[in-house]
Length: 479
Image (cartoon, rainbow, N blue to C red):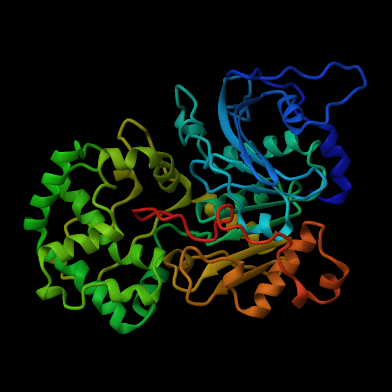
């Protein structure tokens, strides 16, 4: 939030609150003029907040909570659902980082990079429609970027009176997109935004940037190895699909949503090269079979399965991610790439659209204006925004860019890194710049850092259990 609105926001907390479902909901404090100091009591005094669990972690209080949200923020009287959030509490005198990955929220204590940098609190939000944060019955038309941004806005308004210092929003991949959309719709809430590896598919049916990326990424030797294994998996479709059938029978996998085992098999194979560059480094090319034509079926299968995952395009693999594919097919867009190294006769379906990965019972209609609106807003109005990308991450081929209207905002690229790129992976001067800006936006930059940004360093020591600076490994092509 900007300074002029600080106290106004602190006073406008959840007027006309909604009823709360679930156990462990605390009543509001009586109007006696006294206040409680325990953070759990203060959190549970928020209308609509209920406790699921408190977990211990040295130096913090960690809470898993439910928060009552309207299914439709435009019509709050038309029902509510319980949205899961977590709070990693350090001290109300510290700044707060608002994190979302754009999917489910982890209930294991963790600290994202900006939280370590500013040595602050962290609020993490589960994205609406990812279970268990899904309305029942589910009206899928209420799953869009504005409704999700409004979820964040209400959580911020509810927690701001407790955490009165500055706030930074952050997220990686779909979470980086989410942080950007939140800033677009509620630009006065946050004091800064750190969006990691956030794709920006402005024109859904123009994806040539991805083709150019795959033609030059890494080294020719590595690209040739990957391309050869991918092609060989299609050449050997018949014997490898028999193995796939056995795997499906053994595990009870079905293929109703995608349509057939054959479609699922090709989808897994076509994800292979993308999946490698998304989660692996150039040094990992040594793990790819060097002579695909003479490799055994076992070697081809294992390489594809390790990187792409034959379980993913089953009904059981797709079901948890239906909300993502619904959004990709209605607003976010999805990439389509060519395969010049594979003969056309070997490819039956190509990159399949998101519609193929969502049950047909859920209607979908694409809204081409949604991403154009966000892209235009970022170019002309970005303020206190930092975008970090990995040089070898396919999702960075279509990225956010800044225009003349942007202020104190940056797009930086970590050399050689993948979908796990972060501030720590930037070259030295850019790392210092990014760290200094985050500290400044959070209101905790020392006088030394303000006068000399090269002196900027994270305020909290790295904690191997708490800090997560790598990409969360996921199978399938999605951010």
